Amino acid sequence: MGSSPVYHWNKKSILVVEDDESSAFLLGEILKGTGANIEYSTDGEGAIEFIRQNPDTDLILMDIHLPQKDGFTATREIKSFARNVVVIAQTAYALSKNYRDAREAGCDDLITKPLSPGYLLDRINYFLS
Image 1 (cartoon, rainbow, N blue to C red):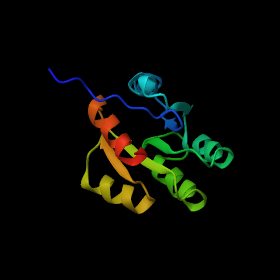
Image 2: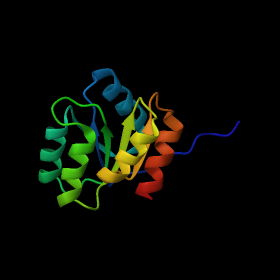
Image 3: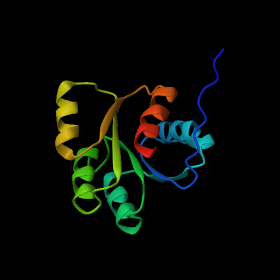
Image 4: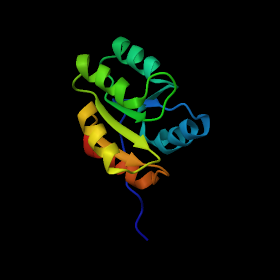
């Protein structure tokens, strides 16, 4: 049996933007062993404000369906002043329109829920390595 890869992101910071508490908890559990500094926001406006105050954040896991300001709108605003932050959008709806919208908003990747922990960690590692 092959063991799963171990990730060492000790100097990295990840913002999880998720309005669903159980989804946020699940993401936290998946990321727990990586050494990354994990922060949370429950809406797009909060994510924008967090990145304004923490522009050196490495990566954002951005839910698309958020209250007030959706993930694409928040990503557009964030990328207007923090071009280097990686944004991985997450959605339960894998429609080709979502992929186009994600690219146009400036997302670096789009993954679908339910999330495969191994795939999620692999995609994050691709951008953080």
